[in-house]
Length: 172
Ligand SMILES: [Fe+2]
Ligand SMILES: [Fe+2]
Image (cartoon, rainbow, N blue to C red):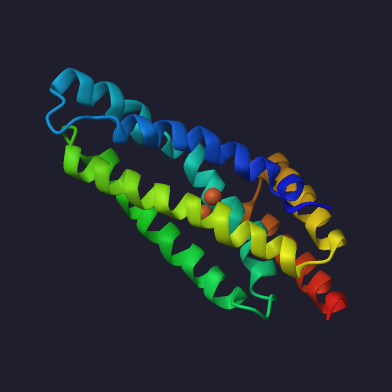
């Protein structure tokens, strides 16, 4: 099984997010208030889809990355650290009284770098180090996470972590 099918849902989210990032990158040095607002509003409202995406990666990917011997712990730690900063940035953007071009660019840059790193480093590492049944389980867990997200996230996270702990145990 290819990693691209196991993380298909996460990659679809990335595509949507990258479109908004490209709009920010397309702004010139002095875009003027109406153009700035036209890019600012859709970007800050990404939050509705972005925050569940971050939660899902932490529930689905982080536990299994931790079990990969070759740099997995470091990747898991970076995901959590980047996500913390991304959430902070979005809290600041949503709390701003006026669109702030500098803050918008900084948030878009961090988010863009994070997504490219996941696609170029994290997802290929999963394909390289995990057996096909673990890769298949990733997509299943993503679907389950999305289906149950409206219920108790804590329960979903705990169930996911237990499942992956078992998978990793079997793999070793
Ligand atoms: Fe992420
Ligand atoms: Fe992501």
